[in-house]
Length: 365
Ligand code: SF4
Image 1 (cartoon, rainbow, N blue to C red):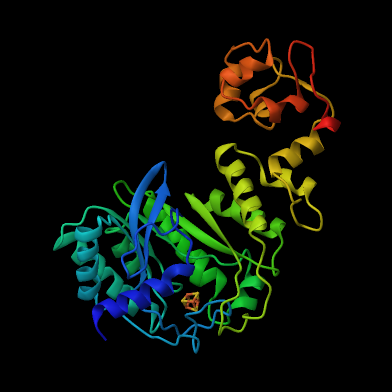
Image 2 (image 1 turned 135 degrees about the vertical axis):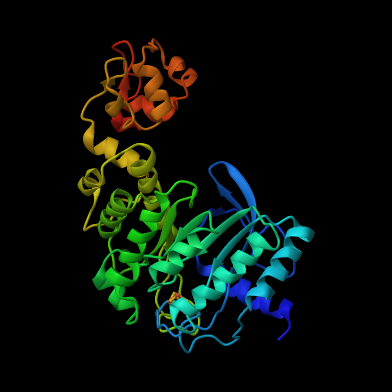
């Protein structure tokens, strides 16, 4: 098979993995696919996202590359991937690689080939850009360590928030050993100076097997124990030709709500247990979680000049920077001052009083 045909097949097979910088839609029509504008830490990067191989011996029920599901099989030789990446870099200004793979043989064998490709890029082609290296379930420590030396970020997909849900999705992946143990190894490697400065990430599939409560509990545990940089969520979408092709797609609103919670955990240091109070049967309400928490927890208006930092960041429309400016002594004498400090007046109004006055009641919101 010629290399451009492989590129189309392998780029298309890699589109389901969302464990990476936010993809801002395909902006470059190379005719090959797999090229995205990705956004991370306020920087944009043109990224080539591909699999090394798309023929998997594993049986994950949701995956179009699983055993028996792949119609168009393809596999790069390491040198071929380097050639195509070099071409994309020169012609289309691609400066990042997101490399994953299906597990066609022993995970170590596939990983060795992925490492060889990335090593050639770094040494022969002197590529200094971003490399996101996907760790395959069950890969040995020595190879993960080697891969970390050539990568900026690594991830292994968690897929499910617990062993039971994982077992429903795949009979091949051992949750504790194949996934969690590998995450702990990567976590150890990220602590070394000059290695994996982009840290570790993971991805979870949202489906009917797990509640939001299960997901938030696990995400919180992962941040705490493995020092993860990011968790990405993927609302389940049925893929034709898989055992779950007739299942209903999971609403994207669920994915958005969990991203809101994730942001509050990471950036606002909210506690995972706070969200339990607003859940119904383990599921978040269908509204902005910060607003839902404020409605449930504030039984009167808060005097904005008397509130603590922790109270302020729980008021809708007020973020950590604005809260910090207020507690460091910037007095709010009228609502407009809140706007000047970076707050969002209309969202905050029902929950605050300024100078003893309150302009909108919670019920009017
Ligand atoms: S390990 Fe599972 S999710 Fe990954 S490619 Fe194979 S079947 Fe798909």
